[in-house]
Image 1 (spheres, rainbow, N blue to C red):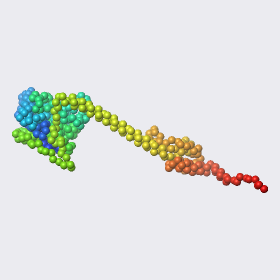
Image 2: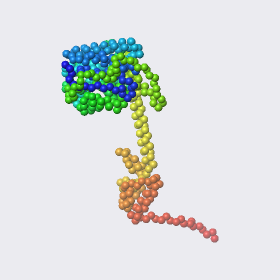
Image 3: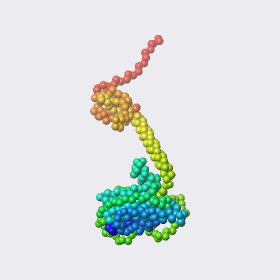
Length: 431
């Protein structure tokens, strides 16, 4: 039975890379995304080979078992094609590609997956990642060494553990079958999308309910707005739903849309100047499949990196604490150069410090109790003392106290006795 639904496919080079190594396919029953690797030309060839090898699978199937067997066989044949391509054209050595594919069989989706391209399912107003990345960082996530958020920015996030390549004639695909229902939306994409646009924004685009083509355009725009450091390929499949079924003509995008006889473009010498340096990432492989002995080195390197990161955090925190402590000490030292006149329970006191407190920390201490009673002050002076009077220096504070003492003397009627004039010392008259 032919799949009933609508679909769309789109692919873009991105904003950094000079060529598109991705390929995508959207047909009547088959939907595929392949993200090539292997330098300037190898990735183009690898993803194109994978798409054209799987293209004959776009047909009705009588059972999911037949579809699974056909998908695994096509992937194995594609791996053989890659091996022969590298043998016939040594400049392609190391080429490979991810592969994420869906074959629709009645109400089921037959899924085959290898690499770090992804398949998402939008159902019941939620987006779920269906496939698991075959990457080094995903292994770290699965083992609890890093979080999924840390994996998004890990420097080894492009290290692939499994991929269709010229080094493995019998690739191991993740194969499984899922039931579909009307309204489902299946999103197949390269990591050019999933590495830039998170699930929250994918969900927002899906919720808008636009046709698959417009939804794919929306997602591509988000990837481009996010910098698009890699090629971006999107295949969107809607099961049933409100949008009319497209024509039966298959859509092929990316490098696989070029003629089958792919020519290897010459390696161009990098050109640039000091104002616009050459962007090396543009022609470097976007993925790397390590040899087995390399993995232990990567794990050990990741341990060292995590240790350095922890030590860096600790050192940074110590520096921050030291700076805060120094700033607090400097601020407190400055407060101790200030003075003011205030009151304790019943008398006038000269304080050292400032009037403010920080929580339970008092920024002033009593320096001298003047023994001037508040009750003896005129009302306006008493109010000023209770609100505190700022002094420029200790001598200024003493001058304020002298004025307050004079006011208190007037209230109590006590006038200080005048200082007696010095008298001459009597002497005897020598005569």
